[in-house]
Length: 270
Image (cartoon, rainbow, N blue to C red; front, side):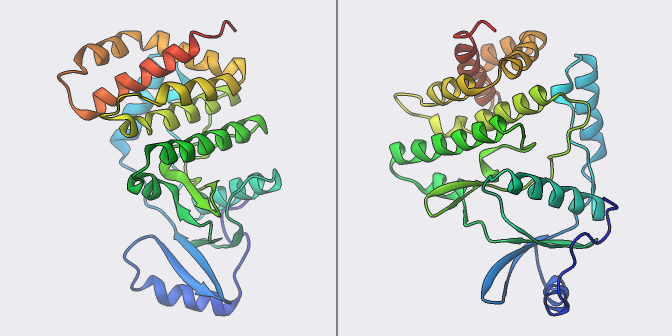
């Protein structure tokens, strides 16, 4: 993969995209072409280097590759890497958008339906919300069982089409320096942490049930990767639980997610 044109669009689609890019407010925008709705993702900018360096320093200090930041590929390289990841997952019969074209300036994908997160946020029926979440979790487990990983498995990176969840946004797929178990463990942590807000104010929290179901499906090596993380970060997790009643939302969410994950892991001796 050379990071330049991988799969060029036809000239008419190229002209349409170039025209719309001039007025598009976001780096991801929709186009209608050939009677189909397509999505165009333009090349991203580098992330804040200080945050990336801090995350890398913490991962190195605690000897936890699972905490390493994704490889921050931007421009043509980033687009080509994401296109390659999507095509690999498509070949494994996983529900991802089709790659229509990829150039050094943009990536064109088929429409994958609506984003799942806004549907969850708008749901008034808690049982329906958690049913959709459980299906998204089952899809992530299916991805892992096929020997793959996502890289950015927060609930915001799932779609919904014909009532079934799909996978979106593989910008963080490249995770050098990690084993498969660590990559999959990272996926599970990102997914579960992103769900805590849906349990806020509920009489019967559902996150422990989702965590137990997903960790039951995980490989023993993946569960052990999460155990290593929790052991080496035990002091910080203890502090988060102690501060939870007084601290901000992020700390409370971290404490709640860790409690659910810890309870689920306690069911297994790998």
